[in-house]
Image (cartoon, rainbow, N blue to C red; front, side, top):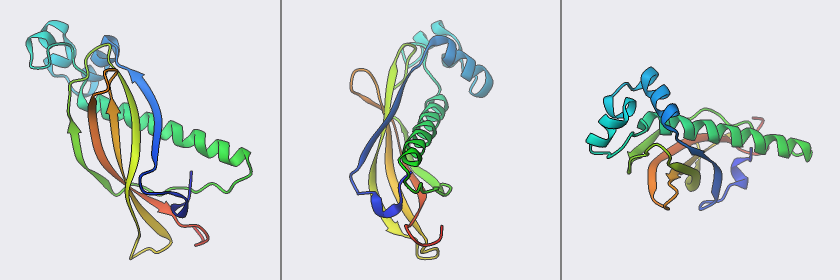
Length: 160
């Protein structure tokens, strides 16, 4: 992963895609969000969604899985090149979580993020605070999912 100084506002990162199958939707819903329109095709068709819909929490979990996997891949590539890899801190949270369009069985979302703001932490100057908009866009080019994430990013040469 990169250091705070290496990240530019506006930088965009595509980090993967995922196709939501009926089986995946039902499996996740049965365990974590057992609402009728996530569990049964007919109930989904009768709902406002018009089809078997993935739980928004399922979409968020897939986004996180792909984001972490891509971060590991980037860190491994940097390490192979002999670069110092920044170890990011935890996230102090997120805002503006939006499920903008239903994600139906068979839909494929492509996930990306774009850096919106960055600043040095006033209480921990060895860290920067980054905000990035994460989105999931379906195969029709429609944004279906969005949230603004915050992360602690180490600053170069500060001993982190």
